Image 1: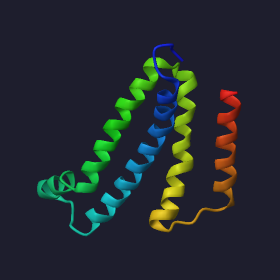
Image 2: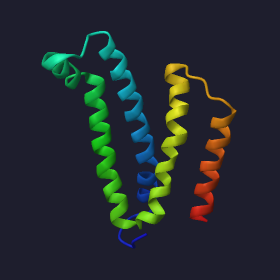
Image 3: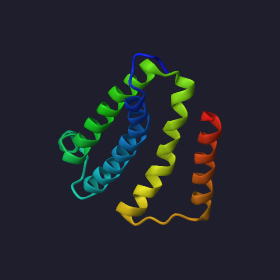
Image 4: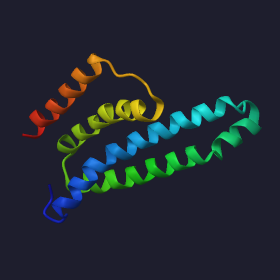
Length: 124
């Protein structure tokens, strides 16, 4: 980490970015469900999809997450920061459980545990 950035802010950025990316994924899925109901074919359908509030919010979150991530990378080595993006592989399925009622099997929980353990090993 560089000496110029507050450590607390870097930790907020490194943890918040995967949360934001995960929220964007949920919004993409919600957008996809809304498209089914209105036929996104042709130019008019594409324009309606591009104007969907969930999609616009997802783009805004992704854009904000990207800016935050660039800030983190400005002050931290990529090799140290990037493993935290693996949190999205844990968070997206959890969000799908809560928001969409999807089921998570034993393999998910084992995999999530391995991801978190790997992050601990990499950053120890």
